[in-house]
Length: 218
Image (cartoon, rainbow, N blue to C red; front, side, top):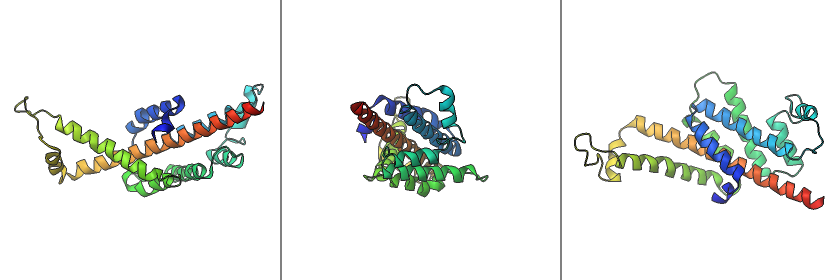
């Protein structure tokens, strides 16, 4: 998965996603994440517009009532024009439906309680990406937490640590349901953020492929 983020655009998106989305409440994380991905599709198609196209015409094309005005339209056009493959398109549509359902909900939204729906979004991608995302997010969230706990100094004796081993940390939090739920929520949120970044990276890869093809034909 590392090779997906070799390009500067993909790296920038991932960095922005981690800095912005992880700080958002669960609802805001999903809505903003989809909006950021929508922007990447805008950039994809704008990179293909003839250079002599006026700003007025571009605005009309990408206006809400224009042919490229919705995430659904852009995704379908990308598929019909053979810009994005079927698995990426299906994943974006799943994500779009999740966003739409969330936007029409008035009840509290918990990312942890919607793990199944979030996992389904990335299960559309080839290569067991969803399993990789789940594993990576767990390693990062639980690994960071464990490391921080092991570095915690004793309030009584500053030369000693509160915990002497990972086993002691696990034993301590075993009955702390609130800590466990917070860690799980952070894990699923991180899985979503990295997953959206993977989709953005795939959009960048296919955009570059199309541009290279067009240049070769000109």
